[in-house]
Image (cartoon, rainbow, N blue to C red; front, side, top):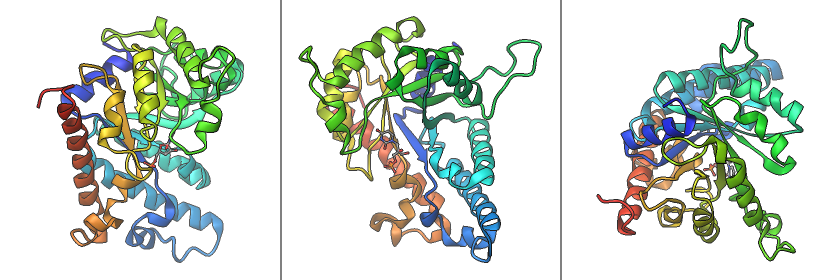
Length: 321
Ligand SMILES: O=c1ccn([C@@H]2O[C@H](COP(=O)(O)O)[C@@H](O)[C@H]2O)c(=O)[nH]1
């Protein structure tokens, strides 16, 4: 049972959780005391500031991971927030991935990578490579369980990412942002929308990478903000597992994501970043938790999201309570 997708489904079942916590450390929302302790406020040049901010990010992530792990099987660090901190940010990212995996969580790196096949292989090596494939030391940056990719270059840009059966990928299909509709919902000459055509390609591309539970190591990203497309795609793509972002801060809610799951309550994982990791700043929790208790606020928000989604599935008759 080494296939990524089988491990993911098993872990989600063990925790009875369909949520993924986004580790998106927006610097302006990191608790001020962490920035002060790390020396970010006294830094008088960029080098010192980036080092201090990256230190604060690493400390922040560790507290979040410790607090949300009872409620989530997976975290999804968004690379953009680490790259903006330069080399110290990449170091913080690497330590975060390692800490999350040591804490028993699976890690989906959100990098939306892709290129022509020969260059895509480089991204594969960086994030998903097997550690010991031969007698030679292997290439690699971090050991993630999965990576988000962009399928725009076609299958030869996707195939290199599927080499390691222990690792998975999620290709952008129908994204959660408002502007996505203008491109992804374009009507094609076939009478199908662009995302529908792409969905059929995903199903075909993923067919040789299926696990024991019927889902493929090639998953798809479909937004919680477009429940109609989510419902349609679930029917069109029986072997494709969905990563569903857009919950919380972007407006998606529990009832919106129900359609992303199959009749067994499987087939999707719902991501939320800001509304969990920065819950301590939200009206709902602000009076209850002090800044230093941001981890407790994140735990409460994660538990609420876990319960809300499970209850929405129960209400829809998909799972039994
Ligand atoms: O369609 C997409 C694809 C990826 N994302 C990413 O998910 C998180 C969402 O963060 P929130 O704070 O929960 O809004 C972020 O990393 C995005 O880059 C997405 O939102 N939509």
